[in-house]
Image (cartoon, rainbow, N blue to C red; front, side, top):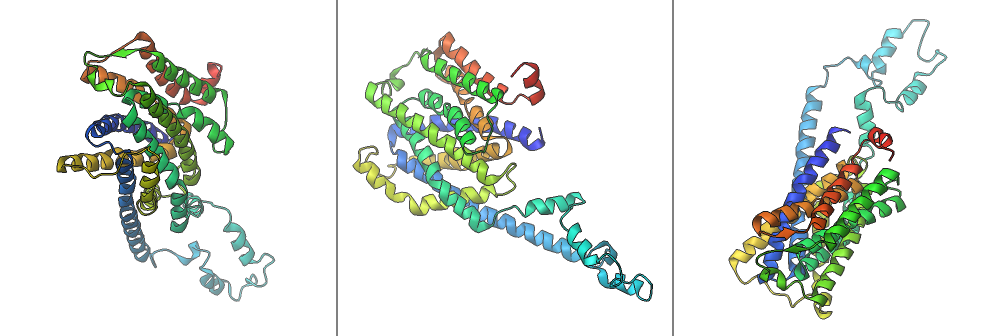
Length: 387
């Protein structure tokens, strides 16, 4: 378990907190400004700010690297490099062992040695060659941008129609989809530990669904408890979990084992650019089908500020952190980690809203956390306990 994996686990906790807070803020926004498409489009489009950041970062890196290369010219002996063959020929001139008369051609040795990395820097340079070009990163971004937009829109549409708790629970079912989509695309392998972790987590999700909750003030939740409206919201939440699982696996596939192939900032920047330029027109068919209310802009400057701030923190910042979680750990671990929003939301509701939970709900939340722990068990521990 390297430092990236540990950092990814810590970052999962940060993302969980941001997502729970953002979900509460988003539902608060929908009380006065019920425009899931506008909120989704703004949040996804704002990720375009990562493009200038990524290109400035690349320029600074190249500038520093160029300065280091210029300062190191002439400081090392030519004999340390394969290219220093001129001095070698001068030294062996007149000796019985000339370059041309030797049995082994030095050029052949040079060709063979170039393929075998002898030092850590050689290994890193060969690994760097697997990095994709900026054009390929843009292509990947354009491929997965629609999937990400659909995931975010369905999640926001669910929040507009049902409670934060129901949306969170349904989003947590993405662990099951991530496991099987990852196995199908060859990005992840199935083993007993992973299957047990997923089904323990799914059982916890089911228990939280069956568990009862109540609060002293039920007025705020009354509007989201009517049958058909809530059922549509639950359906959107489930579809969001499915597309989330697909996006997670594809992100890991494009990024490489530890994110060495793709600059995640640049990738998300292109996702934001594609959303900004190519997906704005979707508001018309969604409105025509009655899924989305008629578009309108926020009626107050304060609402504008809240929507933009929530987009920057709840989408731009948290989604980038979450992408690093996927890249630095695994799609399954990151997805099960997001299930921790259930117990966190439960604690937040207990402290802020005075909400009470049945024993089944609490036990289900504990089980969700247990699934996350099982997924992160080292192989040695898994074998000892028979998984």
